[in-house]
Amino acid sequence: MCSENSCGCSTETVAVEVDRVDGVRTEYQVAGMTCGGCASRVSKQLSEVPGVNAVSVDVATGTVTVTSSAGVADDVVDSAVTQAGYRLVR
Image 1: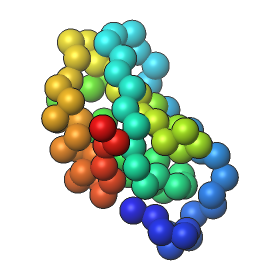
Image 2: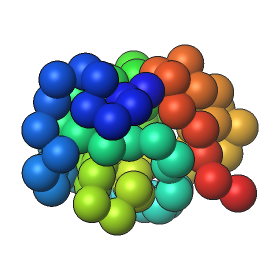
Image 3: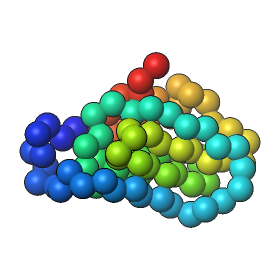
Image 4: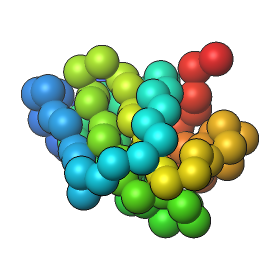
């Protein structure tokens, strides 16, 4: 997790989006994302979750949108975000 730009990334607004796909879209609030590196780590971790078709991360709003064909359980998303070094805001 970035702390005062400790990863050396810019704090500019960055959105990372992987594959636009139709399906069930669920938006989550993620704490601690502050830069493009953060967005990349979260996006990569969520993209590896079985059933996830697309991930869109918006650092400016601290949101992640997960798209899947049949939906992915919130606890699975929570676990992936935690593995990336961040946490879901509940």
